[in-house]
Image 1 (spheres, rainbow, N blue to C red):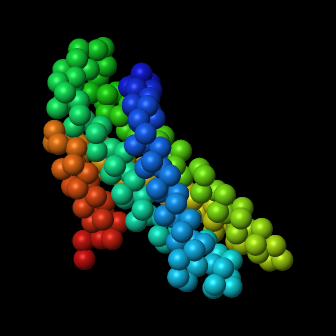
Image 2 (image 1 turned 45 degrees about the vertical axis):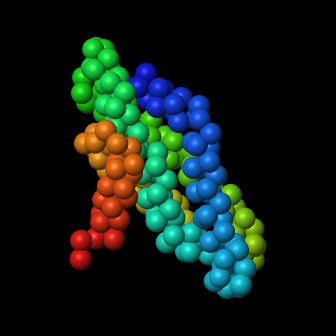
Length: 180
């Protein structure tokens, strides 16, 4: 399981697109929080509410992009058969792919802690509600796990990465927004 996880991490960070995906995620969230209309600087009230309401939507795109190649590239390149000859169960293969993608998504979430410390510093007299921020971060981590599981599952159904991205994105929107 760990060799597959390491392979996923190495594969993601060996290309420039991995870094670009994380940078775009952080840039979009930073722009929404500090620069675009109705940001915290214009609002006059230091809160992370906008970040935590917008971040799941950006996470959908990021995680769909991270997981779109999990199994689809293995099937397309014919390397899944080689992977199947290793002394690993199907559960270990899927868990390794999931953990690799989940760790990459968590690596993208860690720099957003800068937003918490920055806004907490801006609200120096009152501070922000740390309990709500911690609870919201726990929610983002759990949501990241859900989106990663959806993305890895969808990637196992197709050999085309773009199709996996689109279906994963649609499934994430349905599970996040609801079926109503």
